[in-house]
Image (cartoon, rainbow over all chains, first blue to last red; front, side):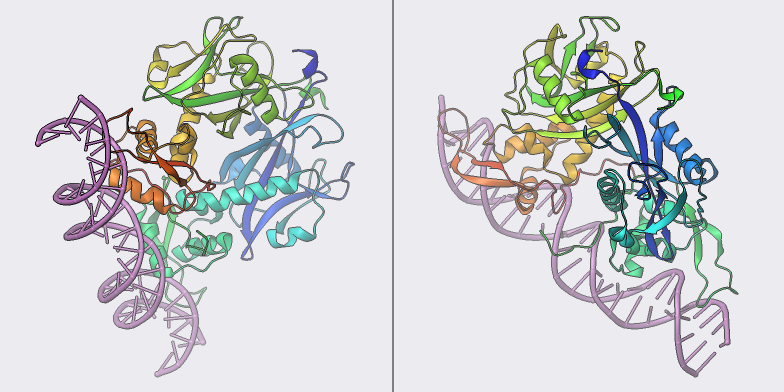
Length: 237
Length: 237
DNA sequence: CGAATAGTGTCTATTAGACATTATGCC
DNA sequence: GGCATAATGTCTAATAGACACTATTCG
């Protein structure tokens, strides 16, 4: 290692953890208990240990800081990108590897570790929040990634508790994209995408709801959708 | 920093630099002059300095190791992902941030720096080559990224020297995807994608080639294609 | 002229979107 | 019955793919 790379780098991970809560796209944030950015909200994350990959690290930190154990639940995890601005952390030279994680509605965080609090924040409320470090940039990139991936992957199903109805899945799309979708055309396209969802032998129980009981589905094995489920045109182009 | 994060990490960058050379998709590799993996071929790259971003670092290393100066030429550069296997480098704990770079045919490398040689290798020849570290994995991921991005972005145009004809651009798609494309339908779709290419007032000169002179184009400002230029179905699904 | 490449037109099968109709539960 | 939701069918405009035809150069 040359003089240019000394003193050493710290490598951290940060997670954009998304779910849909009360019909709102929401992110899991932790309140910082220490300077810098004390009392600001931050993405769950922390230092990578010497004997683990960044993926190991992000799962460990998520459990330590928020009590969310992804080993427990089916979910979606992917690397977003790495942020390396030399000024991104005033304490030392850090490089952070950011992840996008999608979990189902039922996931409940608990505070722990360095964080004084952990809770879901609807993305629409984030503007009024003080966000630590460059985490606002990471959040923006993460949300864009999720919206884009809805078109050609089955990530959307990771937002749903199993089993789910096609209406549940459609509401996920509508919430994330912010546009209404035609129920009939949506069902046609989802069922045409091989391996996206698989029907169960059950329907929604009759007693608990209004209207005709719906067919229940579980997640299929496909990760890429053929054909894609394209977002409706929004004027531009 | 806790004991777990000591001794420190080294942060490096690696670049999957692609072009089309003699009708073959090719990557820019450097021959290693030192152990480990002496005489094996590696991606251009190196250590990140303390006062630079990883993007700065990859451009600097590319110039130092191969003589390719991206400030000179229009090209495509994007982050691929970060590789963090604790065992990926036997000398020390490294995390490497990989990039994908696309340059035009005319780019010529020159050896320099730590590398004893730098040259283009057709991807079809890589199987017979000894590749250093985990760079084979990175190469695979990079090629997959390029192929996927051809569908919904204008990356393909970065492979072309300007000005170029629609046939030049089509041959880029055919080479990268490995499938023949209908000339008429290709032209229709490219011209329908607003901002993909812009026509110039010129045509190919008559003396140097056979057949009718072709309209010449330059790259447009669009990075995302609307509508997308989808790859033909290949049986599955 | 023929060969080679560029550019344009056309036909058809498929698909996306809009919307209507029927089905099945609750009160 | 009346209402709410689910499931399915139908019509039309747009699109993709196959392919034919015309245009322009060279030798």
